[in-house]
Image (cartoon, rainbow, N blue to C red; front, side, top):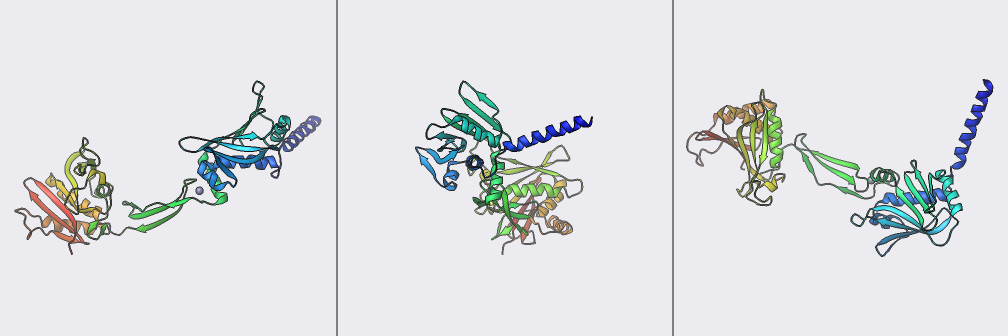
Length: 372
Ligand SMILES: [Zn+2]
């Protein structure tokens, strides 16, 4: 028994010694050459290769890098996708005749013994998982090197070593529900977000215009409505589908539905631009254009809830209890008769003006920045 264990251990030691002997050292030229080839693949595009690899040349639409591989002189011929200019694979072409057996032995020393030999084409293939490369050496023609990795992951690893060199700040984007403006610095190579700036949003008014866009208001309106007891509205965006997207008369409006009552429609919300025109469908996500929000309420029983939801949506600074007080004042000041300049005043709070009036069986809530 003891003897068997000793023999087994010996076999294990011999096997592991063999495995070590097959690996080339990191200083071995073949290791560096294949890593170099892999790095070219990771660069991904013609532009990046030309920019980052010294000695890369453009020859008749082809990118060529002079080099050696497995002890043979030659050049890398980069094969690009015509449309994206992404490098799909590279071919190492020999400058002159070379010793196939010596090259195979060299590559074996680094990648381990080849996985396949095709005698018809005199082709040796290594499919190396650790290195994430597929290498095919053709005795006559050259060595084909294919990536076997995710480009994005590889680019990220490369950025970790070299730093993110190709970066761009995004435009400011407002998160209306978390009341914060965000811009992000993106690495265009590995697509990681590497920096971020935020500014808190304290109100939605600037230069007598609402900064929030139509879609942002509708979304806040719905979310704020759910804070009220037993209420949850759903605003569905609508426009004339047959009209062109770019048609200024193709206006956007929202059908306000009562989610808790079979999505029964209780009102319609639309928006005016500064010159009085309604906000067009193409401007649904355009900030800084709304001068007035119009909400038609078709059911009297919904008037109070629509008003509270609107106040909470358009005034991020207001406390819930304040909104109830302001809402009550708006209801108390409803205009029931003829509207003229003298009575169209409504209630002002936090630089926002709210007017409620009735026209036949409909109620209208008009929200504007307070005129100064
Ligand atoms: Zn990066």
